[in-house]
Every structure is written in C-alpha cells, then in structure tokens.
Image (cartoon, rainbow, N blue to C red; front, side, top):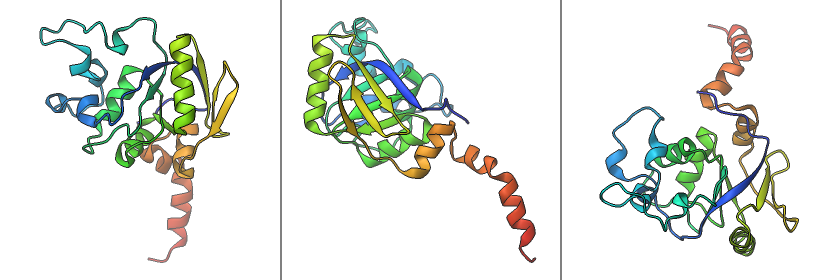
Amino acid sequence: MAYDKFTTLTSTAVPLPIENVDTDQIIPARFLKATKREGFGDNLFRDWRYNGDNTLKQDFVLNNPIYKGKILVGGKNFGSGSSREHAAWAVYDYGFRCVVSSFFADIFKNNCLNIGVLPVQISPEFSNEIFEAIYADANTELEVNLEKQTITLLSSGTSESFDINGYKKENMLNGFDDIDYLQNMKSEIETFTESRPF
C-alpha cells in the first residue's frame, strides 16, 4: 500500500524523553491480534495513556493538549525489544510521520521506513536542545527535509544532518512501499524479461 509522500515536514512536536522505550510499551502484546494496519493508533502507549478503568492518565504527554504535531521526539534507544511491526503501525496510525531520537533499535527503524514513518537519528546534544526548546514553548517547530537529509530547530536555526538508506529515501520521497516500487518498475522488468532467452 502506498503512503503519503515525504518531502519536507514542518511541525510542532510531542516530547517523550524516556530512554529504552521498547515495542511492548509502544503497543502492548494483547493488541497484536489484528492483521490490518488500522486502529493501532488508539492503543499507542496504551498502558501509559490509560488507567485500568480506561480513564486517561492526565500526566502522560499524549494526553496533554498543549503538545501536538506530526513529530514524536523520543529518548535514547527508542523502539528496542521485539521485532513487532505493529509498533511502527501504531506510531503511523496515531498520526506521527517522523520520530526523532539519539538512537534507534535497528528493527524498529526499518519497520518505520517500510510504512512511511521517517526515523531521524540525531546527536544527544541536539536532542537535549530540542527537548529544552519544546518545554520552553510547546509551539516550537521542527523542519525535517528528507531531500537534504536535515532536521532544523526553527527557533534557533540549529540543524543537523541524518543518515538514511538511499532506497528507502527514494521510496519515501515517492510515497512507495516495496510493492509500489516494483510496480513502478513494471515496464523495465517486462523489457528485461523479454530480452532474456528462455
């Protein structure tokens, strides 16, 4: 399934400065029964967002109306733990299009890239600067430029570059998943096939 093209994203951000956030915290195992990629956003950080009686925990950041946007800024080692794709699905389904951290677990990072969520890894120093800026002003915006591979804190102008696999970058710029990429090359594949002896 195709996803929204990702070129430049300018947005406020939600701060979650907790280290070692694992995939079971992102989406608890009891919500993994569904096979479609829909509805997982309702249970993103379920046990942190809700009490046992399903009332909201007022002290959790996603329940604080002053923090909003399409960018989630997480602590170091975000997405550790199991390889469940559902964690990335939950992040996407909630509405985030970019996750920023000073370090990502590799499997979570790749799962995000497969579904249209851009994981942006930055230095610990820049991460701290971003958190401080957001806490000083919840309307602080970040600009993530995928083509240039830069992330900028607009209030200060501080910017850093980030790495991304070239194939995944091209897919995100075009809104492709792996199947879309192959379908886009259909004529080239057919031409190649016709040129091969049987």
